Image 1: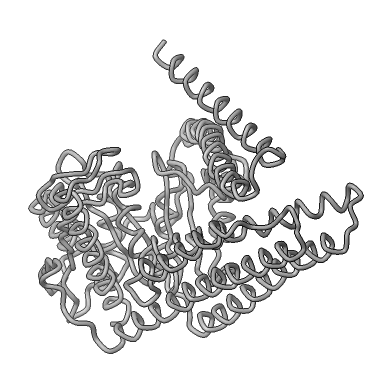
Image 2: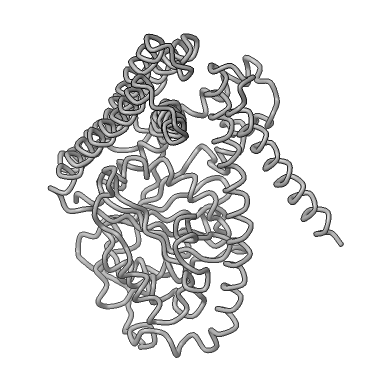
Length: 497
């Protein structure tokens, strides 16, 4: 009974959105609509179409993936039958000669970088700036091309001329992007998003001119001016594509000169949203150093691209054979645009332990979110013990916040330390202490309308921001950037050691 209204509401929303898009498309080709308004309508069509597509894909694949996960659990049976021999065997354990030690860092106590770690950070920032500059050059080329196409259209008295208001508005957006998303500022996902969106918005009118003039030529209009305009706009698209490909190729060559680093993300069960939000900041910089590996399960699903390329049942690795195929599908080279991908693996209950072992073998660093870790939420005890047994602890950074029971965490780590396997890499005479970063900012859902400041006040979605709210938002964003920088420095310090 409770799901029927929700389903009906979803269908009504989708049907209504489709009708709106249909009206917009009809308006594009209507002779009663001013040419200057057509490009605004194109943008609205793109936005509505993307929203509809995302909603339908999420709903369909979300249900399909849920069924696949439930089927995987029912087939799991005895997980030990699928486990690797090293997991089933009993290893000798004893307390190391060096007692358990730990360090807790925060924004005010993060140490300075060593020369090796500083070189890694500078290299990542250099590649990031090159990537954003590529997007900025593309946007600038598109605006100049848009102006040329508009001028030629006006000289030819074509009905495809672009209004002066649109050119001025796009110029303001271009200048605002240089001011807000300056490539030399600290790396943020918003900078890349702004420049990427600006490229798409400036590309839309040129594509429209190509399609509209091409349709008119196909329908029998062969005026020299129309043909010239079609060739000019098509040439702009070709030049833009070649320029971006050349710039991206140069960036890929620079990045490929160094071996990619692999960051493995682990977390307490049911705290995946916090981890994604936290690592989204670190990942902006890390994607120019190497890949981020996610071992996903439960409510933490795979990315949209994987869902569209494969069947949901094939995405769930619930046998050793599927696990091996999933690991072999990981990408370790820069993508066509010049950034490393995020590798994701969705495991069933039967093989998640072997998957953790496999990912740890190739990892250069581990960032483990312990948000919410307590006696009542111990959904990561196996991973904590495994890190001390099989991975150099100086390359691990534990992340905590106010929801973490630090005393219980330290007691758990100390117990595992005193019961370490005899072949652990952490039994060396001069083992680094366990490193813990205490976060002062929560990253629950930064893209869903409310950011928490340090006092716990939040902005309500849809509320008109007051001066006080704007100040809190600014302070939170500033604190978030500092948190990200400190965490990244600690991770790189462990890698460079």
